[in-house]
Length: 114
Length: 114
Image 1 (tube, rainbow over the protein chains, first blue to last red):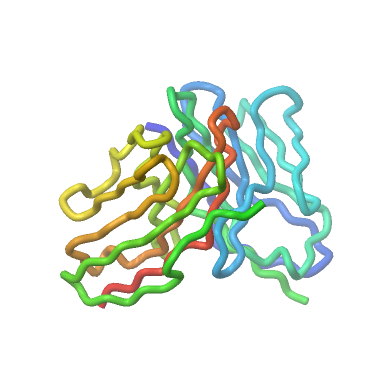
Image 2: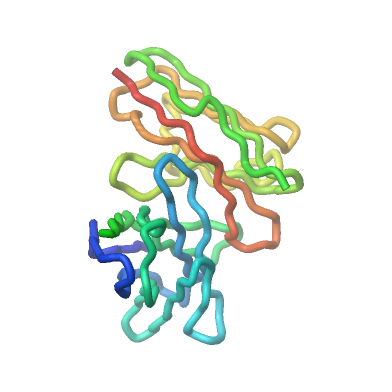
């Protein structure tokens, strides 16, 4: 069965430090991959997506992610974290079906220390 | 461009009562999704509409949950009767047909069942 795992439930980093959030998926084919961010009391916002081509994708707010087929991973990175990045981050997999089905991971909560 | 609208933002009900949530997607978006997000978990798809029709309701508890999308525009999700385990945030999202998987989310409705 298809699944998405995010091994880190909660991460705390200092402002200005680098960040890496991990995501692994289980799927029989190469999926479409996404990272969403959810600020408190808000809906989800798409940060970036991978469909094909260059395995390093750039997103909004200075985020990037790298697809590694051999590791079934799609980790999110940011070189320097800002206090406003504190939020919940969700990795998601788009399944290749007759309709646009997306499965979300459980999320990683990011706290930023000033 | 107006975003996805949801109402109410918050709702508190007692178990066995009924409740309804409303969603108005972005104009022109053919696909509409309802997700349930339990605290500490990622969003789980309840039902997906393509225009008026249902394309996926495999995880909708049909004995108590129902949803409709009349005229292919706005949608309502109903729970009757509610259980304690229905306490969650209910997210509505929409996407353009052909814009694979790029979902735009509303702010959600936080439901508390006591």
